Image (tube, rainbow, N blue to C red; front, side, top):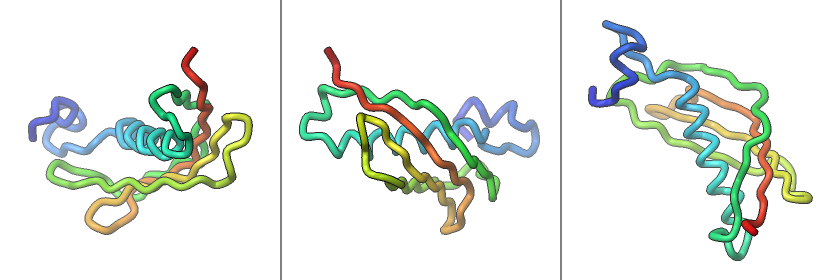
Length: 106
């Protein structure tokens, strides 16, 4: 149990904080959308909102998380609408709809 956040969340019964699961999901979504542009090094991803966030299964020390994200709709005017899932031990542990904007670095 090397991660500091496990020590206080919760003492004696460590669980990965949901906010960190959703953050990792959002970062996975950011990689997805940057893979849609020919020069991803010239873009930044800014998350605008998260909806329908659900936690289905707890994540404990030793679990491995697998993230899957897909576009719900095609990217329009830089707006990306995605569905994200987090799995642990083959079970769905979290899901969310994510919206982000990609912007070219000036």
